[in-house]
Length: 135
Image (cartoon, rainbow, N blue to C red):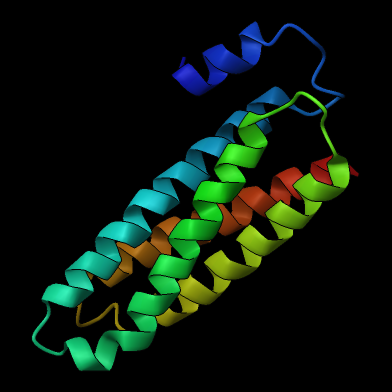
C-alpha cells in the first residue's frame, strides 16, 4: 500500500464514485512523470548536443509542470469539480503525448529520453483511463 492509497482511504467523505485504485494509479503516474521529465530536461542540458535538444527540454519542463499540477488537483477532493478534473486530465494526457513523441525522436541516442518517453506514455494512458472512468 502506498501513501497515496492510504491518504485516499482516510478521506472522511465519499469520493463521488471515483475509482480509488485508478485515482491512486493516476496520481502516482503524474508525480513519477514530473520527476522523470525534470530529470530528462536536466540530462539534456548536460549533453554535448544541448542546442539540438532545446525543444525536448522545453517539452520536458512543460510536461513536468502539467503533471505536477494534475497530481495535485487529483489529490484534492473537498469541493470537487468534475469539469476541472476532466480538463486537467485532458491537458495532462495531451502534454504527456507531446513529450513522449519528442523524447522518442532522441531515444536511440539518449537513454534518458527513452526512459522519459516511457514514463510519459504510461502517464498519458493512465490519465485517459481515469478520464474514461469519470463518464
